[in-house]
Image 1 (cartoon, rainbow, N blue to C red):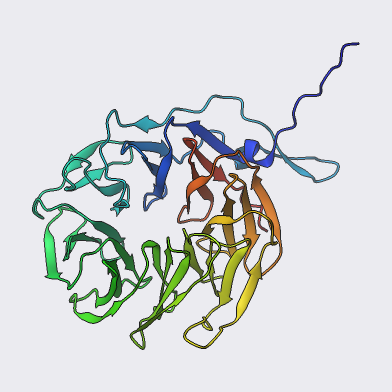
Image 2: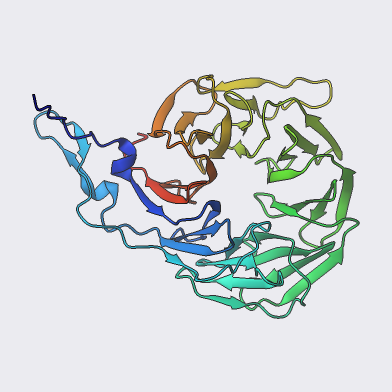
Length: 378
């Protein structure tokens, strides 16, 4: 007897996300400052660029049933425009790119590590005026219209417009990661097992501390007191900028790939355990003080691989090694399935500045932008 199988139902991810296969693992993702474009660094050093503007955005496909008031999203009817991908490796993967101006990006060139810029449409060109030494770290200061870059132990502030060096200094250690505080008054620089905290105004070093562990992600708290860093040696690094002291939270089940401070949720969250790890701000664990732990989402049998804190809401995106992506409310058990597991891990996640779009880069070469309708979180 012939069996007729019903068509597979579309998931929420099918309806709200755009998905591309880039054929190579995605290493990092970054929205530009205006939110008009997404850049992805592939594992082989190529760059991919996608326009965030969507001719068939989920909001334009929402339909309200007249009799019940129930909202639904109709499927897309047109194919997606392909991303712009560089023909050859152009970026160094160990140096994370940063935003440059409203539309562009800055990155370290693949062959010699010099500073280059990319437009939202994928054109790349060299930035002159800072010497030929390889760039080892980058960060943007959008309010000041500057970027800060490290070339080994040399730190330089430069204008985002013309690329002119404004000021610089030599640190007592090399720099591989730079974190800029939310008010752009402070810089945190990590490298070679040390962290330096500097004033952005004059690049005066406030303190330099010895800090074990290889840092993966480095970020400031909203109050500009704490620096938090995830480490590959299954630990979380905390630096108290006020007292000039550092501590490590150890014995995570897995490397802590990502950490994030949520201003709306008043919390610090991190990956690397069987649920989202977190503490309530400002009461973080430090020294003998245990802090105030919070529980986000539900515990499971699969390790949380990465977290990405929403820019304005008390939410965080959570990915697992299976490729499963959830949306969790910080300090609550509430969860919403964004994407079912694909079998391939997520290598990078990032929110757009307006919080409407979540970029997801996979180890299988997939790149996705999930766009959440405006009324989804009301």
